Structure formats: C-alpha cells, structure tokens
Length: 118
Image (cartoon, rainbow, N blue to C red; front, side, top):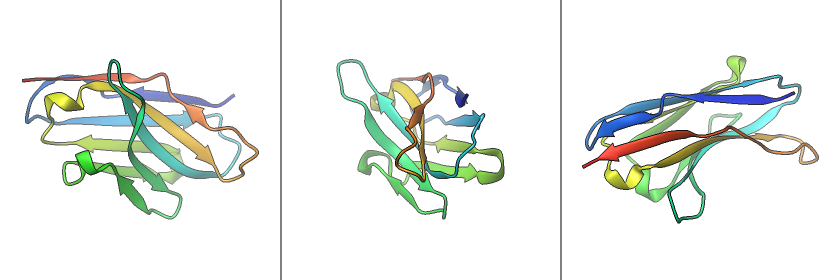
C-alpha cells in the first residue's frame, strides 16, 4: 500500500523559511512526477511546484524565485524549500505522486499546514 508522509509544516513569520518533505513508501511502480499542491480556505487546490523523474521542474508564477523543489529518487522523497514566505502562502500543502503508467492512480499525502503570519 502506497503511503505519502509529509512533514515540515508549521507557523512562521512573513519573510521566514520552511522546508517540506514528503516520503513515499510502498511504491511498486516507476514515479513520473512528484509535486506539491496547496489549498487555502475557500480556494481550489493549486499546483505549487512539480519535478519529473528526469529532473525537470515547474513552478506556479506566485512562488517562482522563492520556492525550490527537489527530489531524492532513490528514497522516493520530494522536498519543497520555501523562502521569503508571505501570508498569502498560508495553506494546507499536499504531496502528489504521479506514476509513469497512466493506468495506475495518482497518490496524495494527508496534507501539512503552513501558516505565515504578517
């Protein structure tokens, strides 16, 4: 059974930094992409950053230059370094794993709360 365990969320002042981690266990397939999404109250879940098996990355415009996604493929772990945090970054952050084979479902973590105070 695939499990995604997120850690690293918390409360931080504006301008501060946090590092999120997501470790996937029970993986018996090739992972195509790992990504971070976030959902703020009253808003839809949105992509924050993603990284492919080959190392290609993409970011939401709102976090470019402040957030960095990285991964350790051997450990099936993805990280999100968040710098210069803003109150509008406050949300629940979710880890997402997308298999290479489209017949295998996408997996989600349980979410970790990030709160940025002004």
